[in-house]
Structures are given as C-alpha cells and as structure tokens.
Length: 419
Image 1 (cartoon, rainbow, N blue to C red):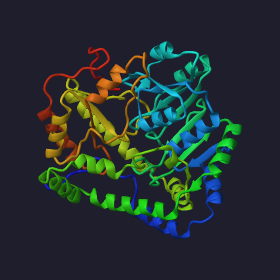
Image 2 (tube, rainbow, N blue to C red):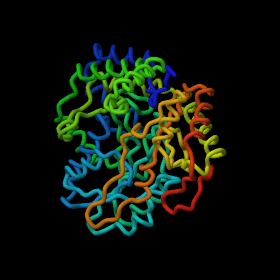
Image 3 (cartoon, rainbow, N blue to C red):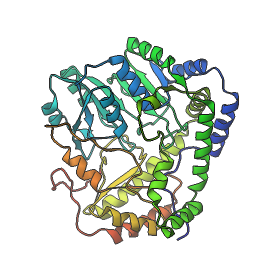
Image 4 (cartoon, rainbow, N blue to C red):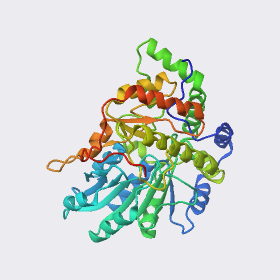
C-alpha cells in the first residue's frame, strides 16, 4: 500500500503556519505581548508564559529551592525530562504506580512511600485524559505536600487553566500538543509571591532568538506536508527498502530539545513571535476539531471493547473527560500489532509519545503495573481526519495480530470493561 496514515497529525492548519511565519517578521515587544497573553489565560492574574513546560518546571524549582535530597512523588509514567530536572535540582523522584483504568497514582501505595523528606507530588495527566485531582489534593493536604499537575497532554480549552486545588498547573503547546503553537507553555501559579519571583528570574534569561522560532515553524510546515498519506507512505517504504530506522526518523523530527545538558537549554524565555503565535492559537481555538477527535477515540474504543476485550487493554479507559490526544492500547504482541496496522495503511507505533516509566531510587519498589503497561503499549492514530474506512481497517488488522488473551498487568484478573 503506497499511502500510510501518519501516527501524528499536527493540530494546526496551514493558515496557522502562515500566521506564525508572519509573526516572525512583525511581532515585537515580547514583554507587552507576554503580559497580554498571561492576562488572557488567567483571569486571576496567576498566569506565566514560558518557552516550554520543562522551562517552567525548572523555573519553579529554582524559586522553591527545596533542600537537597528532598523527595517528590511522581506519576510512575511521565516525561523523563521532568525527572532529569528534579535530579538536576538535587531532588529525588519516587514513582507511584498507576491504576491502569484511570492512570491516576495509586494513593494506597503513595501512603507507603511518604517519608519526612517528601515535599511534593507531581501528577501527569496522560494521553488526553484527566486524573481526578480531588483525592490527590486531599492526600497532599494530609501530608502537607505541594501538588503540581502536568497537563501537557490534557489541554481542552483556553478557559481551562487547571485544577484550583493544585499549587501549579502546567500546559504545553509544543509541536505535537493540542492547539499547538509549535512551542510555548502556560502555567497557573497559585501563589502570587512565588509567581512574582518566577517572573523576576525568567526576565533575566536570554530570549529565544527570532530566527530560531522561524526555523521551528518552517521545520514543522515541512513535517505537516510530509505526513500527508502519500508522501508519508513513500517515505516509510523508502526507509524499509534501505533498512533505515523509520521510527527513529519520525521521533527525532519532533524532538524539542537537543541531546546533552538540559538545564542551559531551558533557561530561555519565549520570543515575541512565539508569544504572538500562542495568543493567536488560543483566540482561534478549534473546539470542533477537539470534539471530533474525542468522538473518533470513543468510536475506536467502543469497537475494541466489543470485539477484542480479551486481547487488548485500553489504559485510561475510565478517565473523564478524555479527548484522546493519543490512543494507546496494550497488547501481548505489540510488534505484530504494529506491523498489521501498517499493512492496513495506518502507522501504529510504540514510541509516539516520549513518556516512560520512572526508575525508583535505591530501596524503593518498582512500578510494576506501569512497567508492564509500557512493555506492551502501542499507539494508534485516532484523529478526526482519519476516514471511517481507515478506522474500520484497524479491525481486521487487530484480528490478524491477536492470539492469547491479554489481562490487566496489575492483578492478571481484571478484564477490560467499557468505561
């Protein structure tokens, strides 16, 4: 099959690229644009615009200055750079295993992990779903912990600045994210004094170069064109013919930061073009497309639930709301499932998201359920531009790849049930 539906469909229109390119020419006065964006984002004046969630998280830890050796409980599956940032500040990330139906940290396990060195808990909302923060907030209050939520994969609306019970909520608008501005992040920092210190420190950072943002816009414009079905299919066939790693090419193309020392790359404030682009994307937010994406994910989930409940597991199937930023399934034969999907013209992959399992510090338990989930995880496209015919083609692909039943990794006894 010559055509191949890409694993990633950037949530951006060609006219949005045009605006971003134009902003690289006309956008000036980054400080004024940033103040206007932050005011529009947070009615209470608690917003902070950063170049990335990682930059904002680094900025937060700089100002909190937690003691070296302090521990932070983290969702057992999260972006590895968040752990790297904690470690760079002398902190210890302690993973809390997940309830695979909700992808929430299991608080009965967290109770056993809290020590007198624990200072905070970091919750990651994964794959477009939302963790119920209420019990986590109660846990944090009980143990006098700071509560941070990483909402990078869970943006739903310009009116959603996070849960008020969290001390800090962090949203990403990187290339693969919902309502992408091809970079940028918005934080809601609910301590005014902390926010003032964070703003003051970020003001001392070097600004992102205008030409650097221009290069990003051009890069992803090319990516958007190349990932159209015909071009993407030819690219995949070419890599296969020459025995090159196609997955590595795709994953490296969307990487936001270079390999190597991380913190110096984070200490950059957003440029005026990036801030202008982010403000524009929020003003023109396409709520209809998000609704269609959620519906496409729900439709695919219903098919899998009704036909393959004994072969595939849908992690996070009880999360609500769920916009299906990505559509993950757990299979006992993930590589065979990927190949079957590609033969059907749909590019499933294991590395469509850069999240990974957090390794525990010495003497702490491994997150076994999270590890087993990630070991069998396959990401399928479920974006609204996929035709009903393409989605229907997944059914025979799945049928050809499944064999023995797959059970929930935590107990081996709970079967998949529709949320």
